[in-house]
Image (cartoon, rainbow, N blue to C red; front, side, top):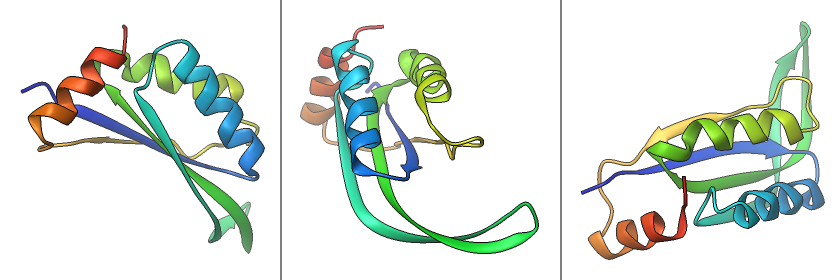
Length: 106
């Protein structure tokens, strides 16, 4: 079974998350996206501990499109240093996996 890749990032506002998700969907680089939030993020940035309200963006894609998705995220993400985390999924239902691979066009 072909594996699914989940790429996650966070953004300052829902509009940016929707804009990036729509770009990726239009280019058929992802099968779907989920936007969650608002969430509270606590982190250290430039030696200062801070917090921010953010939105989490989760993107479902294939291994063959991972680099293209990451490239677009780096180009379009408004943060100086965006969080871009890639996870390979070891198991999903065969039907869901097939759907993702049919929707994504490398």
